[in-house]
Length: 301
Image (cartoon, rainbow, N blue to C red; front, side, top):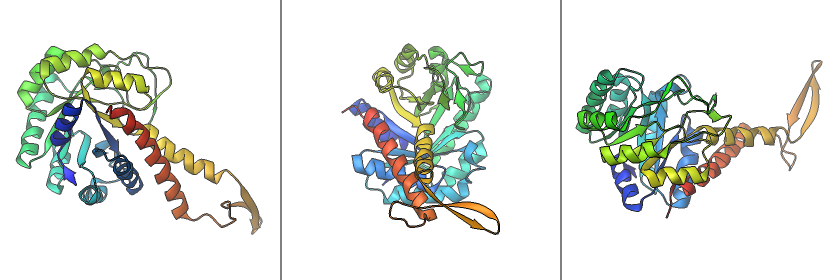
């Protein structure tokens, strides 16, 4: 069933847990995430990041996300992640998305607040929820390797500034920078959970954790205890799908030669040629299992 972000966050507040928010830039990811949520019987967020527009246009994946969310056996939020322009957010809301994030974190405070307020007004007029961001997690959802060393593009959230931002914008959730970064961590990140605690105390709204891939289960639970109620997750899910496909394709091959060129025809254990739908199935299953592990950590029942 299709629901709003606020509805799911209210549930997370009551249960003192966090909801997983997974980027789904293709049909396979949408299927994997919703299957994982249904098997665990937990709410979930499927989201599309504007940075993935070249990989998969919103006009193509958006209707698919909405249809799959409506058909799901569990509550599903259709969310825009890191919407960088108000026009993009408007397109998603007009399409039927139930939640949007305006990301003006790299802009001056006043401009970020003004744009986020406009995004919130658009969302509220459609009955949708809105997320904003103060501070910066550096790189966007690209899957690039990320060092845990201080990043000049990463600015830790100031709780006092966050309070003013929330009051001016009327958002439902705040993306808070407390040491996480998008992408693949190459060293262990150093997280400051007091930032989350102070933002929650001053702002009185749920905190969102971006850059969740690669964080230990213990640190996820510390973040949830501090007040995080939505956790964004993508890179390691996508890597799990890629690894499953690569492992299958590299298991064995039957060399063939045609027109003087040597090929390797990869076959399955029962000696049947691998079809494209086999590759899709491997990717979906691996991503689903990876998502389930993340969801089990986020849901602290």
